[in-house]
Picture 1 (cartoon, rainbow, N blue to C red):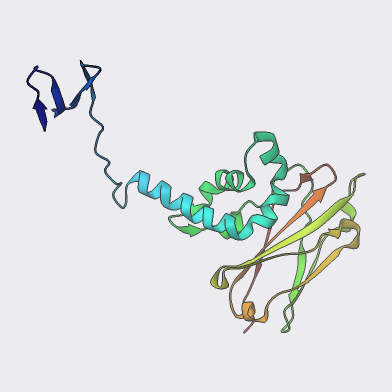
Picture 2: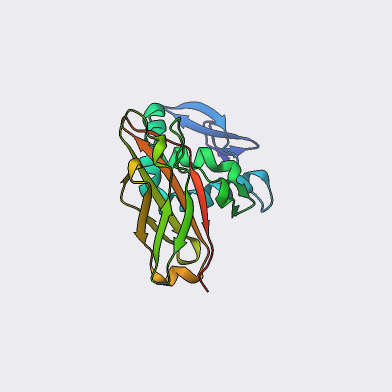
Length: 204
């Protein structure tokens, strides 16, 4: 609602315009549009929901994606979790994460070729990988393990490709839940392999 002063100058909103006075002169600008929150089910709401899900997941996986996606983040002058979110936006079905297709690392280095996973009742995880794929530069294999039900994450110590196997201890409380493991290789010069997914079944 607007008012008019004795000298005929307007103050306030009329229609879609805001009238005001500066140094005794009349000024007018467009009124700001009222913010309307996006409705559930709308495209904007779905996009924000996906972003939130991936941002939460990135928070848990950050130690791994800081290694696996460092080259991409450095190249784009962005942060690793932003690169992670961009790469994985298509890895969601609604708010459900498609864990087997999740990208923790990407690059031209050969994948570790993980095989023969064994998980003991004490929580010792052992995974074999191909030691013959080593290039002329030093390569280390990492394993990132995530338990969604416990909201827990562990990153293994790096193991030289030539060793051919990797061992790490998981919390025993994880063993009754689905666990998702992601292997990748880091080569000297910060080049990495694509992510290799390894599902781990609950130990009943």
